Image 1 (cartoon, rainbow over the protein chains, first blue to last red):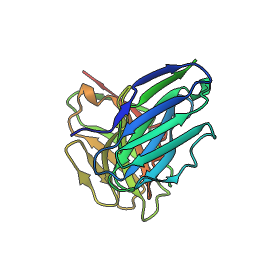
Image 2 (cartoon, rainbow over the protein chains, first blue to last red):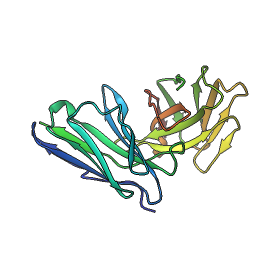
Image 3 (cartoon, rainbow over the protein chains, first blue to last red):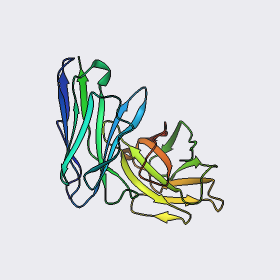
Image 4 (cartoon, rainbow over the protein chains, first blue to last red):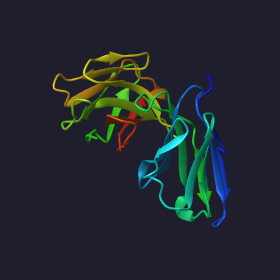
Length: 113
Length: 108
């Protein structure tokens, strides 16, 4: 079974550039989550979608961050413009229901110079 | 969600059982106990969860005390590949709040 797929796995960009991270959840899962992990703050939930609808975006740091889920098999997290403090590992996770175990992708390691 | 307390680190011998404790004294009746682990440079991996009964799957066993104020994750035969950070999380909705977890090092 294919797990959660994320791309790219690594991204290096310069400050001010737009960054788009992509996620394909496990087929049949209707809940999708974006997390960010840094040494200082640990793992933080950024946004949660249920049936493609954003339910909780209270963790999105600021307006520079946006997330979309146009269909059940694809989601994007966009940062525009990117800043060095956005450097982190971004994880996407999906679950079959909002309360069941979440299955995480391998993450995207973002470095903003 | 209720807070959890875990030891920052522990060592375990390869082939022996690893018993990972977690305190969650403020847990409420509808909150589940979840365990995840994160192996270096990988995404967190779901291990097991339970409400009040003990649970077992192919990865581990979860023992929850009768008062539900603490739990223990048991890895029956630890291998070097079980070296990871283990997170104990209490939740009753979609949110997973990851703390610092326990860094488990399995030694040959």
